Image (cartoon, rainbow, N blue to C red):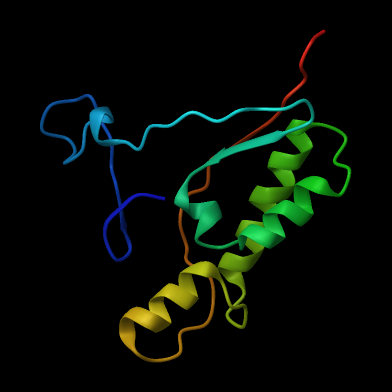
Length: 121
């Protein structure tokens, strides 16, 4: 996730004056995909509330399709947002930044797309 500063993710826009970052500021890269790979594109509402190992566990538990995997990820993020006892990626970063323990999720919007790679032969 790209951030301008602590707890300030990049806000991209093509509308002049509406954001400080344009799409040209985004990280770019290429990846070699293999048959069976799973691609997850999501907002910080997911990544702030669900740890990477938990995301992997959710999508690898045999979800019947990519749509159900996305629903499961969003549901888990929403659950963590409301749980004041849950340690989350956001609470760990907040604890480091503030120098004191912070527990619980971060209320935020969530958008999530999951895709399964199927290479045709």
